[in-house]
Image (tube, rainbow over all chains, first blue to last red; front, side, top):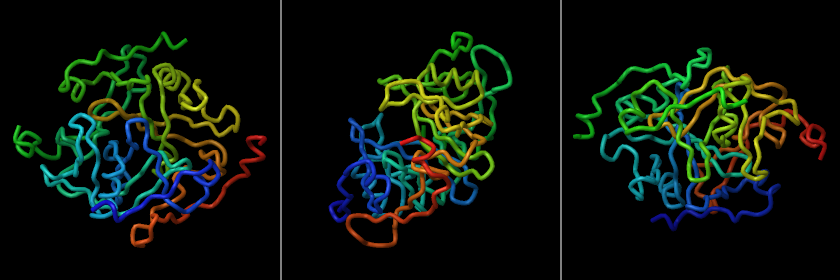
Length: 150
Length: 150
């Protein structure tokens, strides 16, 4: 079905920066990094990758579809957990090699560990500990073992 | 100087997810993606890459240092433009292969095109135009040609 949607042809730098046509750059592995942000709280939820097909599917179905590098397959986020991400807005950057998607996160969270966001640890920048320490900033919001039937 | 800071050793998945030691994963090119967010507005400003040295420098000097893939060199953001990014908070994700840095953006903006954010175009998701259209969401905040002496 993703033949319906077409991206622009990547031209020179100025065109990529100023033209109003989506012309994403997929890297040598066919991937583009994508950050999902909570549309309401503006909190970053996760960073994952899309390939051309998954970006087109995202546009078509209105839910975020990534490409899983570890499983090497299309990854419709929430297909297993029910924690889908409804697309609210999608942005690209100046050279069109990154995607930000603002989402309405369904269910108890985006992170497979059982938290709302994957970014649940902050670097302890003031401590001079070596190796560098992290501080937990989020509690668990659901039982990942139960949801993912581990 | 970046010998002062040490990262943790990457162990098993559970340790990476739950331990409170920064153990970043640098990819096959030695890079980790990093999203700079405005600490006040929570707006994403840019997505770029760090290598081990630039992440350590960022922690040491308190300003964001990337690795430029195009120039293949350490890139102290704002060294040319004066638009440095003062580090407020740094987060990593569950598997520690991505970085979010909340910054106090100095000067008129983060984007080399003359905007505050690199994410100045939104995908026109409601239009069924092919190729997919973009909509501009930000005006210029400075004269990039003057700042970068093009």
